[in-house]
Amino acid sequence: MSRLAQTAGLTDVQQEILSTVRDFVDKEILPVATELEHRDEYPQQIVDGLKELGLFGLMIPEEYGGLGESLLTYALCVEEIARGWMSVSGIINTHFIVAYMLKQHGTQEQKDHFLPRMALGEVRGAFSMSEPGLGSDVSAITSKAVKDGDSYLLNGQKMWLTNGGSSTLVAVLTRSDEGHPEGSAPHKSMTTFLVEKEPGFGEVRPGLTIPGKIDKMGYKGVDTTELIMDDLRIPANRVLGGETGRGFYQMMDGVEVGRVNVAARGCGVAQRAFELGVDYAQQRHTFGKPIAQHQAIQFKLAEMATKVEAAHAMMVNAARKKDSGERNDLEAGMAKYLASEYCKEVVEDAFRIHGGYGFSKEYEIERLYREAPMLLIGEGTAEIQKMIIGRRLLEEYRSQG
Image (cartoon, rainbow, N blue to C red; front, side, top):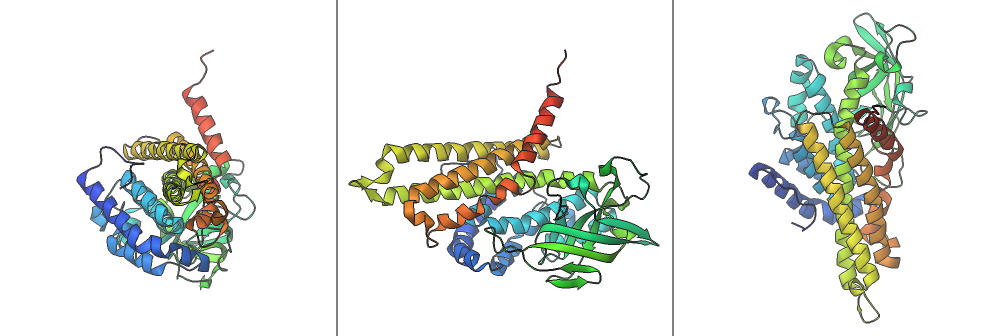
C-alpha cells in the first residue's frame, strides 16, 4: 500500500476487501487498461472478474445475496478501481445508484425481483435523468409518461447514459402530471420508471431505441449513449416505489451516492497520476541528476501529494456521513467539487513532469489527461456543486439580523 490516502478505523473485513480489489487492479486492470482504452473496447474480462469478486453486490443487503457493505467500503473500492482505469468504476457506479435507489425506495416486490440478480451482476443497472437540451437542469425535463389503462406510455429522448448499451435495467426519470395540477412545482410531477431491456444497440424492446455509442475524448471502453422512447409501454408496477411524483427525490438521493463515487474516482485517478509522476521523476535525468532532485519538481510533487490527501479525506468524510444516516449533500458536493478539481490539477502536474513523453500515447499519463475532465462535469458540473454548497451554507448559517 502507498503512504498516501490511508483510511483510519477500517474493520478487518473492509481491509481484506480493499486488499483484494487493489490486487485485482494491479494484476488484471493496469496491464491492459491503456490498450483497451485506445481501442475503445468494452472490458468484458475485467467485468467478469468483478462479478466473481462479488463487487456488483457490494452494497446490496445480505438478505438479497449481496455483501451488505457500507458506502465507505464501496467508495474506497471505487477509488482503487479508478486508480486502475476510471471507465471500469463507471460501469459499477451506475449499477450501484440503481441498486441503492431500489433498496431505499423500491416496493418489496421490486426489491425481491431485481436485487438478488443485481447482486450477482446478472442484471446490470443504468440510470437516466439528462436530456439533450437541458444538461444539469433536471427540473426542465420534457420526457413524458401518460397513464394508459394499467400501464404508462413513455415518450422522449434522454442523453448521457453510462452503460446505456450493456445495461439490462434503466431507471428513467420522466414527467408525469397525474395527480399534480398545472402550475405545481416542476419537481413534484416527476416519476422514476424501472425499464427492463435487452443489452445492445438499436431497438432493444418495442418503443425503446439505444442508437449507439457516443464517441468521446476520454472515458472510453464504457458505453455512453442516448435513449429514445416512442410509446414505450411500462406496467404500473414498474413505477419505482409504486407511487408517481416521487422521482425527483429518489434520483437526488441516488445522485448523493453518485457524487461520493465521483469524488472517489477523482481520488483514484489523482493517486495514479501521482504514482506515475513520482516514479518518472526518479528515473528521468537532466543536468546530471534525477529531475526529482530539482526543487521545481519537488514542489510539484509536494503539491500533488497534499491534494491527493485532502481529496481523500473529504471523500471519506462524505461517505461516513451518509452511512450514519445523516444528510450529506453539502459534504458530497464539497468532496465531488474538490476531488475533481484537484484530480485535474494533479494529472496536469504529472503530465508536465513527463515533459514531451506525456504527449505520447505510449505513456499512461496521456490517457489520464483525457479522462480527468469528465469528472468536472459528471454527476453535476463543478458550478452546480458550488450552487448546492452555497445554498446549504446559507441554510446552516442563516443571518439572525
